[in-house]
Amino acid sequence: MASDPAPPRIEILLVGMNGDLRGKQIPLTAEKKVWDGTVRLPSSTQSLDIWGYDNDEITGLSMSIGDPDGLCIPDTRSLAPMPWAPEGSKQVLSTMHEFDGTPSFMDPRAILAALLKRFDKRGLTPVVATELEFYVVQDDWRETGRPRPPASLMYRGEPNGFQLYDMSAVDALDDYLQTVRSWAKVQDLPADATTAEFGPGQFEINLLHRADALAAADDCIYLKRIAEQAAKKHGLKSTCMAKPYADHAGSGLHVHASIIDRDGNNVLDARGGDPVRLKSVCAGMLKTMRDAQLIFAPFANSYRRFQPDSFAPVDIDWGYGHRGTAVRIPDAQGPAARIEHRVAGADVNPYLLLTAILGGMLLGLDEVLDPGPATEPGKKPPADTRKLTHDFLTAVEDFSASPFIADIFGARYQKLYGDTKRKEAITYLRTVSDFDYRTYLPRI
Image (cartoon, rainbow, N blue to C red; front, side, top):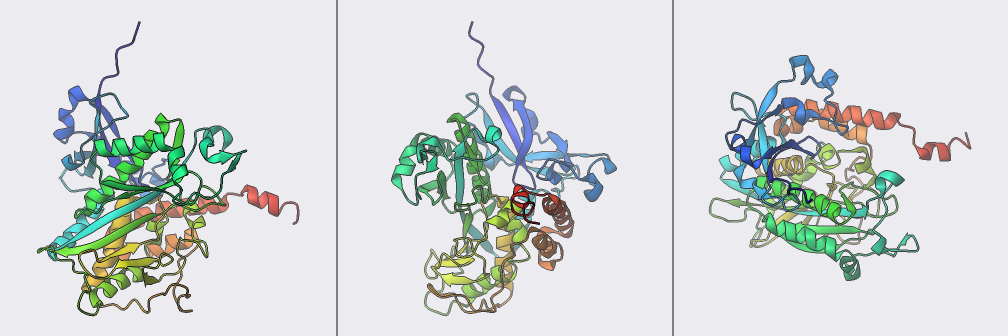
């Protein structure tokens, strides 16, 4: 006898510190509580580390204060169907609020929304687009303990060469990619081009620009979820790890950003004059880049991506059309004048990422800053060019000591994020790896 179909549901979602989604599944018959704003979760939900611990001993945000609830206030703009769930199911993103109506200081959506109010007070609106890279791997990773490319991209157990822009690689996973595109359309995401990237099973999906940075971050978080759910449907797994393979390209999340005024004019447009404002905004991003690197590279694995002579930048530099620089200017004139930030990995929290990037741009609007000479194709940046760090713990300390971070993210969140990541970095340093045993045990 056939079982009854599963009933539809609504999922109310919170974004955690690490870009993870947490929340509740609620039967559609009880969805009124979602729209009434009465769904509760512990406030500490958004302080959980990568392992899911609340770290109350260092944050003081959980049992030491009774682990109080907060209210999950839904953002109706983010309401979208869930095509992988029972028909009629839907999801909505929410922002954690205190019971007095104040957004939680640790909610990533609230942090970005607060920064956008600073732009609005100046009569300005950021326009943002993201480009997400990710890998698709075989679904036996739990058994093997490591990722493997999809079988359709392998020959005798080895990846069948590099696949950059290779349509045969797209064709090999066309069923999966078609599902991703179909579900993105159902959710009304502005998904544009899909391309094969360097690594086996690595793809990039571009999302079109939005004059609403919060919505752009929502699009990105939903695209990550679609990639994951579609992979499950096809017996695969998607991953946004920055560097899942030692010998293949890492995955980035590039951001294109411009700024328009109340009349719709692009304030970065350098047409007909010296690009002073464009350069100053660029300089603001560069000046704050080391302080914010912990946002752009939030995990120990993130730092494996920053390697010389790769497309992941190691210098804090800029250039016109130069894909090796940390900040690239694809267009300096006209309505499309914009800046591309190329530092972040695919593993970032998109709300914190846009907060850090736009915060640097805001600095360049409020001050007149000089980014220094542009790095030209085929040439190295000047010898005194500042570098990104390759060290997780150094990034933690830079972040924790930064007045810029305290201003943009709030001092309480700076401490919460920094303390939580410091514990993660120290745990990583204390872990003796297989490399240590293979290299040093036989020789020392």
